[in-house]
Every structure is written in C-alpha cells, then in structure tokens.
Length: 173
Image 1 (tube, rainbow, N blue to C red):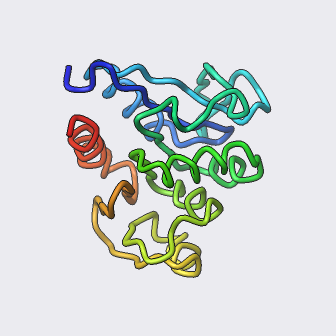
Image 2: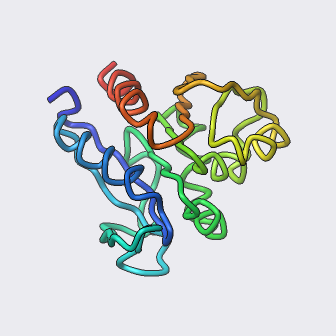
C-alpha cells in the first residue's frame, strides 16, 4: 500500500488504449491510491479502441491540478480528442507547473505537446508521434521509460510494468 493517501487522475476520452487505462488504474488502486477517472465532459462513459467502456468519475472542468498527486495520460487515439478540450489541457499544464507527477504513455505525449510543457524535456512516446514531440521542443529517447523531473513517459503497452513501477516509486517518494 505504498500509495495510501495519494490521489491520481487518469484522463480518458473515446478511443483510449484499453491496457493503458485499466492496467495503471487497477495497479494504483492495489497500492492504495484513490484513482479518479477524469473525462473531458463530453460523456459519462467512454469507449476504448476495442469497445471496452470506462465510467468517468469527474469532468475536467470540475477538477484542479492541486487536488491530485499525479496525472496519468493514456494513449490510443484519445489524446487527440482530449487536447480539443481546454480544461483537459489546462489540467495537464497546471499539474506539470505545480511539480505534480505527470505521466504519459504512447500517444499521451500529444497532451504534453498541447500543454506546451515539453521544451528541453527528455521524453519517449510511441514512435509515430516522435516528430510531434520533437517539434514541441522535446529531446526524444527510445527507452521503455524516460524520466525528466516530474515528467514520466513510456512508448507502448508492453512498457506498462516499467511505467507503473516508475510512477509508483516517484509518488511513494
């Protein structure tokens, strides 16, 4: 129960990558964290790339970064939809600026680019969006996990064990 007393937001939208929401959500709960599923406000339930639903606990306009110890941005195509909602982008930007742990996997890096928090940061991501992150000012590395200050990034579902271990270690501090 290394995360007892910690609050973590997991951002969701339609077309999220199934494992990248559910693996961290269940893993962090197992460690004692209060996990809050945060949606854009477009719907109370979002459907994954493979049709699996996830119910939203709160909408982005209802929460603030200071309410959380960490913010998790899963991949799939959901981040492309998330970044169209200013409250979701602001949540990510504010969390980074407040020194909260902000972790993105796969296409989740799109939210970091839209939040304009990548300049000079070393990150990894799914290879298809590497150019987007580099153009946003990031230094790209091809590693299963990259840590730069309070930013934690990973490439793909196969990296989830290392991604979650790194987040847990950072939050347990």
